[in-house]
Image (tube, one colour):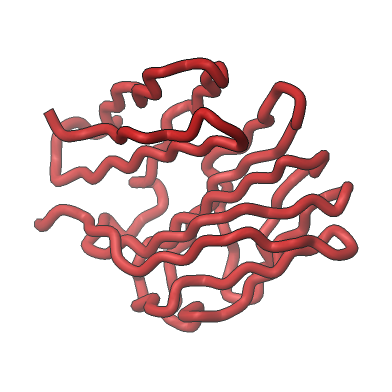
Length: 167
């Protein structure tokens, strides 16, 4: 088996209207690929829910940001049908009409079962933290051809200027 590989991506900020924001999925999405959708708001949304236009999404993590600009964050996954490429996807924001910042990545060469997608508990760092070091993660099935992704996001300075590297 080969290691899973990240492919096409899409990202941006979508302004919500009537508690719905429309995002764009990556331009290339082969059937049976894994789609990972990470979304966040800096407003008072109570949830972030993707429409089921191209099939159901599974929420793997949801957490609230704290501080002066509370927000809602969600990590959703799905097995691609191949019909998602470049399509718009509506996100229901719950309430408050916040903007939705998102990133979506296509992963190929993966296990092709959502049970094989594990998310470690997100950690929120203090805004003055200098070392955004992701948690150590060990997959429940142990060592294999695993791929690990780190998500780092900031809503205000200081911005992330260095990234995790392989040791």
